[in-house]
Picture 1 (cartoon, rainbow, N blue to C red):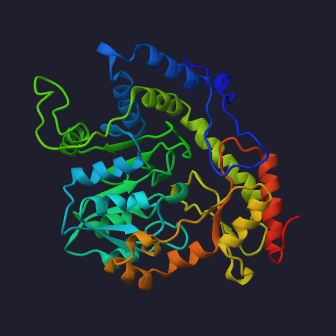
Picture 2: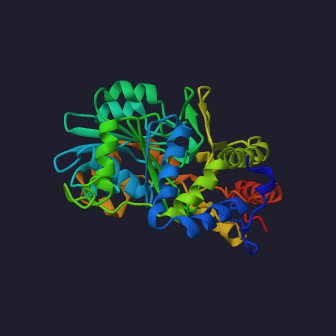
Picture 3: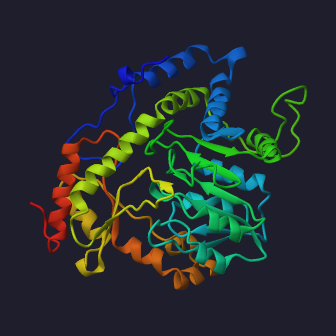
Length: 393
């Protein structure tokens, strides 16, 4: 058995004085797995690491199928292709998410319908979903924002027979009602971008228990051809090239072997922040409901309106002091990419929570290599900003 504790020493560390907002924890285990794949995953062994990664990842979630893809965007795209989404369809997506959650809807000629977020979880608000779901709704995308999960029981009841795609890109290791993030919908999708808790540099995964969906998505993922057998070079339909490389998969297998270690570090970082910032009036950090486990991919601070501090003002001051941060994700309907969309104009009028929180919240440094001393420095600077918005110099 691999001694993970002996392999926990990082081989990649941040350099320079800046405190990074995101970044991975890479050890000799990842180097070992990738080196082995580079030496062996060719000819008759081509794709070996990919198949192993798919199996191990699905097993980790207690699901039957995993499909490894180049990135989280292609994972979402493949999920929607598998469901047959196209022109004339509507897909509900929450306002607070990265644009990749909505972009494949547009790629496929369907219409994104933007729903508001819950003020506590910052995930899809079931009441807002109830208001916007309709006869043209072909799927619902939920987003496990910053490591939290929405009220999936209510969402599934509202959805009825409408498929639910769970965008768990930010929530590996999280759970709701004892079920892991990624296994809460009909299809789960993950991102392994270099900023994520578990990374392959770039990469993604689609997971499902549905055999028919798995078969269809596997075919679409590889140029529309049958995955194996005598028809391997026969293209049944025009598909895509959404394949992960063996080297990425090998890296992912090593990270998956260390997943408890990675998630524990994320939760430790949040605890450091909570100890220092929770006593400050007018600051709210990520929530966690009793039936959930939040993995705190990004520690996020929402500042009370009475402080009169915008997210951009807070970020600018932190930047002056060599501290990286990010804005709370702006509402999708506010993005220039959706100018001219009737659904975006309507959403801007009916989704006040997403607009309000985005205006006064920021993501604080949450890189896996952060030390407690660095978190202390961030909190000292942040507390000074909250003191009448002054510069912490």
